[in-house]
Image 1 (cartoon, rainbow, N blue to C red):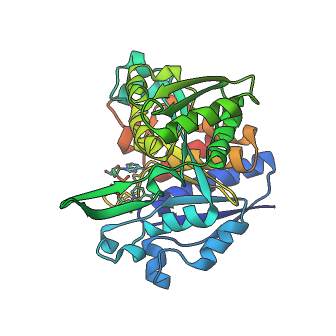
Image 2: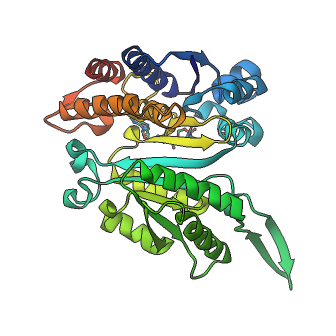
Length: 354
Ligand code: NAD
């Protein structure tokens, strides 16, 4: 049996994880995988029950699992809590506790949704890229000073710091991922200015020697930001550090048209975690109109990356693609001429398409 911990979390997290589990159960029956589900709380839901956004017991259960399916956390009700009790702390606790060192965010422009993209259809049609972001190092975790005075002038500073093993680990993952995609890695850095970027580039070049079947090129981050909107089709896998990945992955996300559609994987040393890129969407929670596709596609990533079940992952992705091709749309991606459906209806359609 393969154990999956399901953490619905808050807001629409409850609705969309229910959809993803329904779809996973159907894939399990079809491919005879043997999935077992165990539920845990996180975020505001956990705070209400246990007085903390993430219990040690929930984290331990995740460590022992084969994969974690996460909905979303957060909501106005908990916004005034002290920082260490706020729902979002659950995400940091899971990142740290599970050693989630890489974030994988695919951006795929579905032919049926090409007009939902803010970019011109001819530019984005056929785009299918994956950003591999380093998640536990760099400037977000380097030494910092909030305030100091030099010659009577206040200043603050942060440090961009990377070690060779940290860069090797993320680069290997990017190359291995590219091997099962279209065989191209673009490494993004700022090696013309930053020392940490120069080390980054040197290590990437070294790692590439073990992957002769994967093409490598380098872009400075300012150029990469431009290229993403000028010609996103040129990219297959982009590998980059924590801060550049944070910014570029949000830029890439809008190319697809709706955040409700976007999945992600955070790859860990112990267990990996899969979640849609959006939040708990309190404005639509409980209304039955949330788009569950991002979470369903995150479940497909769980099958691909944690369980190495490519066929089962593709089956889910094809079922979502067919649902879109047949004209079914949740409110966030609905335009005139299509068929409007709610969370449960669209889940049922994807389920039947499997
Ligand atoms: P959000 O992503 O929750 O929502 C932004 C907008 O997108 C809203 O209008 C929402 O209705 C819409 N939307 C999001 N997901 C959708 C879906 N699946 N289907 C249809 N529409 C969808 O971002 P926000 O409003 O800035 O944040 C709300 C809460 O979520 C906050 O408490 C925030 O801290 C939290 N948050 C959590 C995560 C996470 O759990 N990983 C990520 C981002 C934000």
